[in-house]
Image (cartoon, rainbow, N blue to C red; front, side, top):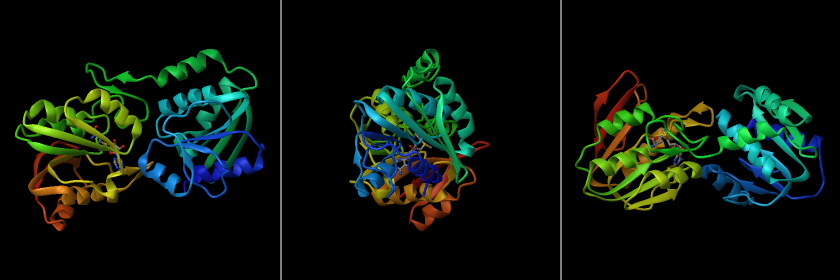
Length: 325
Ligand SMILES: C[S@@+](CC[C@H](N)C(=O)[O-])C[C@H]1O[C@@H](n2cnc3c(N)ncnc32)[C@H](O)[C@@H]1O
């Protein structure tokens, strides 16, 4: 279980407030949480919440007496989340945040404390849980700077829209750029983009290959998919979907820059699961176009899956792999 979540639950038990509506931003299931409304942008975690019987929303609105918050990985996402939580608190409500020490918990606690005096801070499991209230107004200039961070932003010198927290929010991923340069102009029929992020690869594929009939973008992060809706136009379909659970149909071509991180840690099995799902969802003679860090052992896995593969380009960090079913 996520140790930050354990620390959050422990802090709630120590500093209990009875009654009132509770919202959990970045929700994850835990048996000792009070009844609450959850908000979770990542599909695998949202699915886990649902299985645990948590009520979920895709867009929190209204006012809550308590907002719980497990921030994601980036600084901007955490600070924008503080502002969002503030705006969802009823007068006199409190925000309780929990983070791993390695994610900068002490730094963020200090930052939040500049907006409003800390109510408490609990350290356990190499994590911190800390709380503020909105009995007094928060420091105005900080709050508005944090609100600005939540606004969609443009990647410089492009028209691509992203937002804090999504993969490669500030620049086009260099691995994806390498794959884009080696995508053929001959893609045709129905394409799937697995782990489509904010839509870069689909955008390039549509620009390069005029005979594409349709692209399905599959992405776990609802925020990235919202950006993709602005970045990719044409006959495209957007799926908030956990790719490891398989795909609903088969495809002529699959393109992807598969993830190999879960939260903070490396998870090569996640990348391999993407390859397995792609192999299962390709039509006969269908092709797979992917980019990966050079050290990842994907060729051997593709061979186990019965696909012929070869590396068609490499740079100091990445390799582009072409495979056929
Ligand atoms: C390396 S990024 C590539 C993003 C995008 N294709 C690009 O080129 O910029 C991998 C993407 O996979 C998504 N992802 C991670 N786990 C996933 C899962 N289980 N199902 C679907 N997408 C997932 C991440 O949110 C991320 O956007």
